[in-house]
Amino acid sequence: MSTSFGFSLEDIAPHIELWKNEHNTIVFTNGVFDILHLGHVTYLQKAKEMGEKLVVGINTDSSVRRLNKGPERPIHDELARAQVLLALQCVDAVVLFDDDTPFNTIESIQPNVLVKGGDYDPNETDTSSKQYIVGSQETKSRGGKVCAISMVDGYSTTMAILKIRKQKD
Image (cartoon, rainbow, N blue to C red; front, side, top):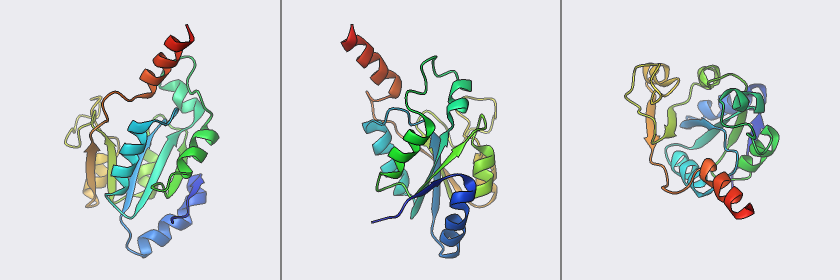
């Protein structure tokens, strides 16, 4: 059974350093993870299979609002979202980031593997493209891998919110 850590870079930095010294492959992914669903869990399990340690970056509440996910988002506050992810066996650490992108967090952690969902393209180099994976060029330049994981059809936070609203009416 793994032990999880979080929520600031300062909190997880000693663990990252230890894991690197032990030659563990560190995988990093990020997202809002607002209403956890099968798509999220499947994605995180697949990400964990790419290494020994999975670090998940979570947008802070203010970062989510700047992403314009909707006026009611996030549904759950950042600490609740982080705690739920930390409870998953596949997640080894959670870090909150307040920037618009996880670039600074990725540069601080310097993961061996950078992972995003299938709506991103690991080979995209145009930083203005919606398919560009932030931090991919830097990760590759350090000898790391950048991967995209297929999404589970029919599962998204937006779809869950719409379904709840429909049932409420």
